[in-house]
Length: 397
Ligand SMILES: Cc1ncc(C[n+]2csc(CCOP(=O)(O)OP(=O)(O)O)c2C)c(N)n1
Ligand SMILES: [Mg+2]
Image (cartoon, rainbow, N blue to C red; front, side, top):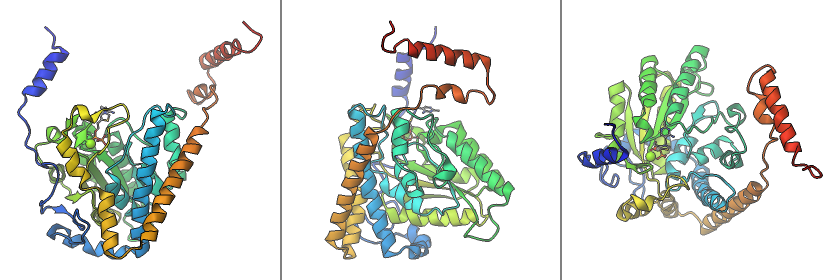
């Protein structure tokens, strides 16, 4: 007798409850790098000490930029979700809650680096020079996949097949080694790769294969794992019995856990990891503890499977509020904070206007790149479609 869906559900429910190794997060965990307390006070913990020199690279303007980008992307994210609800996008993938992990790590990259995203890294794309309306275009279903990475800050394509980008990025990093474009001793030109993936994706075979090759060939690469605690409705405790950063040592590379809602921790640890990668010291893994505050996508309803107390715990540790408190502690003027809110509202309104102007491609392009050379079958299908479309023209029946 074959197994049924109900059998499978019963099997999962009968499995022992995994230990909650990050019980609602990370407060008090001394292994987790943190610079700013949840209340917004600069008080680096012991794990943060070795990363402190990297903060010296940041100017006052960088601090403002971090805050501005986090606020702008949150507003953009909300607007995009609204556009989906109004039928303008097929789907939206919210990034609410993960702004600090993404902004800090993105600013640690250099122009020559290559960035391989998953599908939620909107602000990373923005920082690398991608027009975020290109993301909307893709989620409206009018492009076949996105953009040309080399024309957009080496920000590669969104990847919906979980963890496949980890392999792409490792292959790319191996190519950098073969090209001699890394580890030459010149930090201004030496390249590195950073790849973003999730706690759920970490269970894919692709992720393990990428880590094996990266370690074996000592690729110039950073694995940036955003542990947002959920893979749709599956909690991270079901993905792993051990904190995910510990997996790195099994592959033979350093692993560091960071408070992913602390933008300075994200910047400093990623800056060190990328520096090491460019200098030829090999790959490393960063596990950023954060939280997906919204739904997995607009096709999901997290109230069906999530404990409201857990959500409340994380909302109280919001990355933007934390950084605003930190900046206010340093005496930032209210005018700046107000101006950022205004800029974010303008950005979102502009996004909406441009989203409503998005048009679809010529229908015939679906035939253009099937083969490199003209092909009779494709030509026949194109001619059929042209005739079919023409049959709707005015005056014909
Ligand atoms: C190979 C593969 N299996 C399953 C899916 C369906 N799927 C899409 S997103 C997702 C959860 C991913 O969770 P995680 O890696 O933690 O990333 P997050 O969405 O939380 O950012 C799943 C199972 C997929 N896209 N690809
Ligand atoms: Mg996840």
